[in-house]
Length: 77
Image (cartoon, rainbow, N blue to C red; front, side):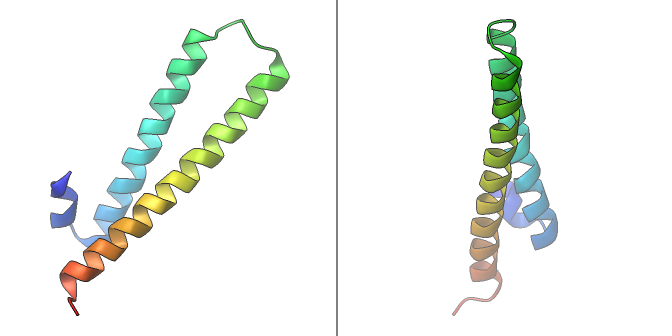
């Protein structure tokens, strides 16, 4: 994971966001395959919306933490 800190800040933040979204997508697909045919359509729609929201928030938090860490390394106080 330390390789991200060696990338330019914008590219590193984008990489962190994409990795977080990929992780969330893998979890969503795994849950989808395990529960196939056992849930009503309303539950499926709700779960998709919540997975997208949680993934987006998680990616933003990781990107913000990464930018704070990168800013501290580039311009120490």
